[in-house]
Length: 361
Image 1: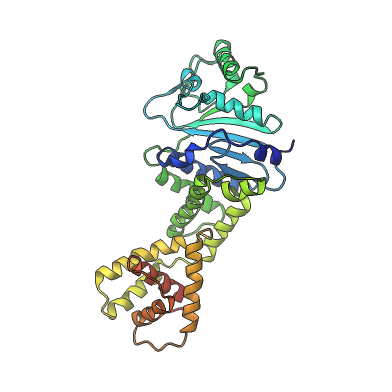
Image 2 (image 1 turned 90 degrees about the vertical axis):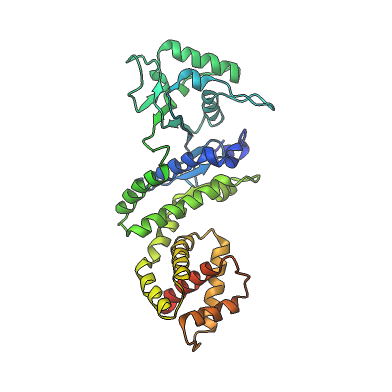
């Protein structure tokens, strides 16, 4: 059975993670960093979110043959013992697998294609190993490194949860790793990963670093939080995954947009000369920066359609002889016929940026 068929024919056991934003915040930041790491490697990949596991990575969008699974969990404070990972989870509706049981389930389901199953955490692992007494200083541990007695505990638990199991080659492909991502400040910590990535592909200015991070993070959240039923490998890719090709588009979109922070200074001076109050200029400036990021998100159909409508209105009033810049903006707003009571300044910023981009103020 091909990996495409296996992915589609074996639906996830549960998908409650999509609705728990607190639990997934750290997980999605880790995914962003892993995504950039994969992209720097240059090989094809597909990262699938909250489907068969927290994260699954396959080796090709068109013809996948190998898959890796990742559970990402935090623990603060404390360490992970083997008992923690073997403990069965409780639910009123059904029996849930232990962490080890879920990891094995991925191997069993994708036995012909599973390259590895991985448990990632910020906390250390307190295991009895065959080579050293304790694993607290080990950044990555393979299940087959545990003492025989500890491995027997795993085998007994899996036999209970999965009835009849064969641990080989499961032991050699099961890994427990520590991430250096900060639990309390993981989003800011991710900036360093973005900087390294952008330096690798040519480097960009400081504002664009934040723009790239936010644009990719928005896509990750959208894919992770999609909860509707999915049928077909192509739809798994479309709704639950980010491909190498897709990330290339995000990066190239960022490259195609100029850094407009210096331009805002000029625009602000024009608005000042026209008597626009400081508080209004400040709000428009905030929305200007916000829109610089949002317009890079091609999946935000609302924003992209509004961009089209704004440029249509700008073209229609190309020869307008308004007495002021704000007078021209008001004319364009009327053309759009929008109820913008709560987003007036954001719409002003959008029009100003699109006007600058096409016509150079």
